[in-house]
Image 1 (tube, helix red, strand yellow):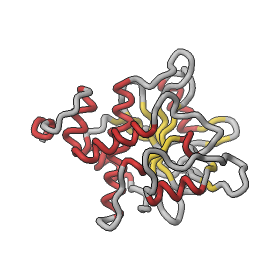
Image 2 (cartoon, helix red, strand yellow):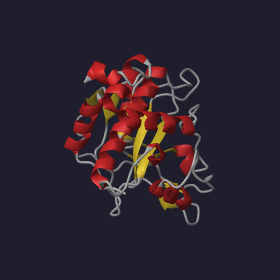
Image 3 (tube, rainbow, N blue to C red):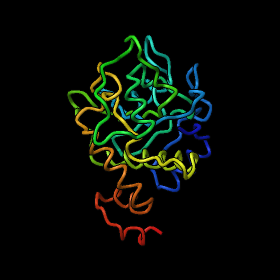
Length: 237
C-alpha cells in the first residue's frame, strides 16, 4: 500500500510517461466525502461508463455524480480520442463494496492471471469499501452504439495506469514492487458488475506490465503506433 499521489505527482508521472491528458477544472481538490483510506491506496480499478453519451456528457456525470450517488465518480476518464481526463486527485465514488479476498490478493499481488472470484457486492455481509483504496478509471464506452473500447482509447487506459502504478511503486520504495497485478476490473471486485465490458483483465494486466517492464519511451511509442519495440526508447529518449 502507498499513500495517495499528490496532484503534482500525478502530473509529473503523466508527463514522464507521455500520457495525453487534460485537466478538468477543480480536479486538484475534488474528492468524495470520505476521502482516501487511512491505510493507503491498494490498487487501481478499470470501468466503462456503459452508455452511448458524448464524452462531454460522461465527463459531467463523473464530476457531478448522478441521482443517488454524488461525484466524483472516477479519478480519470478515458475519451474516445485516446486522451485521459484528470477528474479527481481525491478519492472517488467508483468502486463501492466488494470482496475482501480480492482486496487482499491485489494488495499482496498474490494471484496469477485472475484474483479470486468475487461473491460480494453492495450490501453483502462482510463486503468492504473500495472507493478509498483504489484509483478508478472510467473509459467512455459500453452501450449499443459504442459497445467496445477503441484501440487508441485502450492504449491510453493502459499507459495512464502504468504511469500511476509506477508512481505508487516509487512511493512505496524498493521493499514493495507494484506490478500489473495491482489493477483489477470492477467486475472482479463485485459480482453485480460486468465492466469493463469486452476487456480480458488478464490481457489488460499483461499490457500494463509490458509498459512497466519497457519504460515510458517504449510505452509511449506503443500508445502512438500500436507497435511494441524496445528500441523505441532510443526514438523518444
